Amino acid sequence: MKPPRKITALAGGVGASKLLLGLYEVMDPTLLTVIVNTGDDIVLHGLRICPDLDIVTYTLAGIVDPQKGWGLRAETFHALKHLAAYGRPNWFNLGDRDLATHIHRTALLAEGKSLSQAADHIRIALGVKSRILPMSDDPIPTMIDSNEGLLHFQEYLVKRRAEPVVKGIRFVGAESASPAPGVLEAFCEADRILICPSNPLISIGPILAVPQVRDELRAQKQKVIAVCPIVAGKSLKGPSDKMLAQLGHSPTALGVAKLYADFTSTFVIDPADKSQSAAISALGMKVVILPTVMKTPAQKRKLARALLSLPPSGRNAKRLSIANFDIPKNQNSVPWHRFRDAMVNSVRLIQRDKHQDALKLLDESIADAIREREISWIRTLCHHAAVISTFMENLQLEKHYYEQSLAFSAENPRALYGLAKIAREQGELETAREYAARCHRAILEGDDEIVKAGLLDLVLKNWPELGER
Ligand code: FO1
View 1: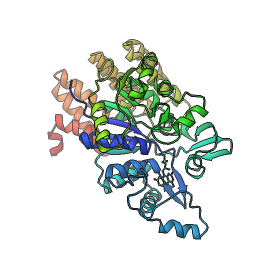
View 2: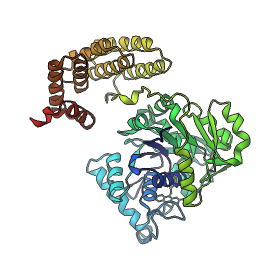
View 3: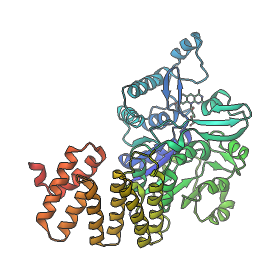
View 4: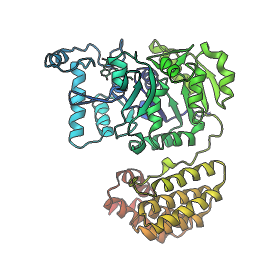
């Protein structure tokens, strides 16, 4: 079996960072992408604080406070004392050097950068080689419904020390949020997707609540490995056990497994929970027993190595998923959900090898999109249908969808590239070159950075003469 190369990990803060550090040290860190919960983010003193993004970044940069697992090593708190003297709240311990990160991030956001751009800037400045992506650029604060009323998650956890009784959890704004750029692609490109041992309700839960994320994980289920954050009925870190129980879930490995069963194929539990492995297997997951308590660097590396050596569960065929496609940005338009559902359902049909049914569904949606002049959806749906046709090895059908797409947006680089590729495969070299040249022009004249990054290389690799003009 070839060892996995690209790893995408879903992470909260302190618990996840232990495993992430192990991974960072045993694999090529440039092939690791971490998707981080931002539900814990809070604005204090006018500054945007992103605890989990910072915990992951500081840990991988080797500068985190090793005792607390958050904040910076050998930190001082002079600024916080001054803030308190001005009457500002000081229940959230912001260190002097940590404040520089929050000031810098807040300034970047005020200058018009997105949260993912700010996160990338900070991790590069701190020398972290892995990609660190927030789950979304949109704010999705986690609010706790408690016996003391509605509390921001940090008020519940830090100010009230997780003492209030939890009655419910809300991810405010999740319905209208989008995954940050690169998140869905990172699932699709990964050889393995790891769910770190983080709180399933308030660390992994918010990531799953971002539209498309859970669907995409379901589509990639055979490569999803989850590490259980509960060992012998106790959280590895934080109040997971208490929260699970208060919300009516069992605070056990089995309880967590039930929350993950729809998108996870391999569930990793500690030897202490061996007795639950049959019940977890009955949920349809493969159970792997590995020591998951990571107190020392050696234990972190050992678990990371063991996870990297696990085979994918079930078929490992390269799978088609909606992450391959740019979902049009006009998500508020009325037909948006209908088109997106058609995409998701077509992927489900393909996974059951029902390619014809998938194309029928897409044909209906393409006809709707044409009627409603939804140009970006025509492009997306046609591209999706063309890719399915490639899977079916039906070149004529693939060509038909690209031509249909081009009829509505003549300078669509993906369709032009598709037609260039087909013409070349059919030996029509002159036609291929013409399409490739149009595609090259469309990429350079367009403003789609993702297309530029991905497609330009492909075009120039196949038609290098275009780069010489
Ligand atoms: N956790 C605490 O328990 N008390 C704090 O005062 C505190 C301050 C803090 C400052 C910056 C930061 O990045 C994280 C901080 N954390 C603190 C940790 C953090 O609030 C939680 O552990 C995460 O939100 C949960 O992953």
